[in-house]
Image (cartoon, rainbow, N blue to C red; front, top):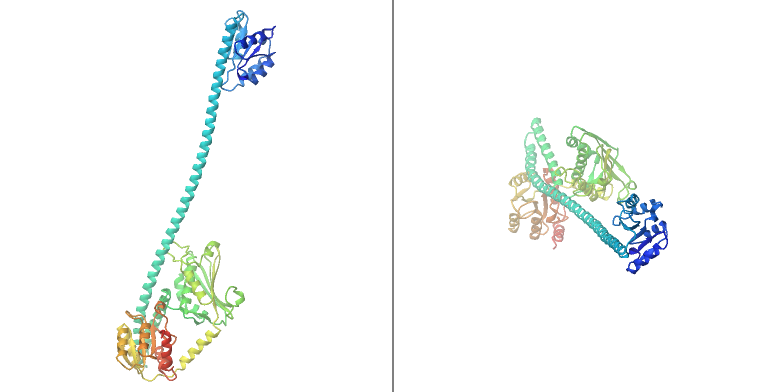
Length: 580
């Protein structure tokens, strides 16, 4: 094969063919070449060694040969057998030394030589060449192993990188989930805190209502019994009553916050409501916020719940204040807009009243604005906001048939528009008719009234008011005792019962009393209504605590005065409401 052939270059006579024939006889592939260029081409093609007569290199340009040998791979050291004349060895021949330096791996054989010597030298050179081939094979195996290792390393690194990315993504998701869980838990704790505060507020407001009942009742009786001509005494009593009435208004706001009060829409003058809240708003905003209030002239009234509307406006104002930590300007404007100017709302109202609250605060970006009315969403630190303010305002507005619309520009402020339907339809007319009918009710004759309340102070105070009106009173401190009085056959024209009582609610007492005495007239007195306990029948009037003597008298006149509904009709309504 080419990789182990011996190339023979001998330019004189028949030396080359004879040497090649001699080597072939010894079983060595040999091939004579003619000239140095042919030798170089044959070495490039493949050979085991070259047998060269000294005279072939004597006058030749050896630069191409030197360049070829210099280009050999690291494993290769091409062997030469140089045939020299007698005494032509490198130890006595400078020319041979020069050739040795060019050829590198060269064996010198002086002529004449025995054929066996030539074969032996050639075979030794071939053995060395074969070892070079073996080294090449091992180097090739190492190279292939290195390449395989590199591919394996690259694949491993890719898998590690992929696994690292997967772990990083998983870790990021876990981190996000943990953060979301912490946020939800914080919101839950905050909502539980708000719920607890609401329950506490509702209980405190209920008890405060009872105290105000006693204060207002006794003050009204004192005012009647003390000399009317003593202006100073009357002024003191009037001041005390005004203070108690302001306390009653405060309890209504507390009950609205605690959601212990049903929504009771009525015709509300928005301009007057905003003006009446001016002092409260200024105290809530602080000295660094300038308040500007503007109302258009000739506005119709809005159909709204006054207490809830006041709470909504206070929420909007406090949110605006928090958005202006360095101070600023809060504007409140009330005007009317036609239905076509507020798309998305029912077109049943002739117009909508718009309560516009604008600030010069930090504003909100689009993402925050899109979530602003979501329950529990807040940009404030935990503990400084519940995330319920705007959602409560939005819910009240939608429940009243209106809407809350927000617009904001970061760095320029926020505008909140509370839209409410105008009270110009049948609801307003019905409210006016009910008020007129109430005002025209004839006085009730002296009657026997069963008064039920778990608070002795309220029983005594209300009994005094009723007796002052000319009625006689039976007192019961619990629902069970009131039912026992009725079951015992006592004559009773009217039952006035508190709503929130231990054991039995006022509604339960009323329904049980009507089962005992169908058609019995009942008045339910309460500062709030727990809707979970049931819905009062349509003919069961409400008396909101704390009530004044004139309010108590109007309700009794409507129930017992001339022209009041017959007991039979009331009994039928009670039976339907009770499911009977």
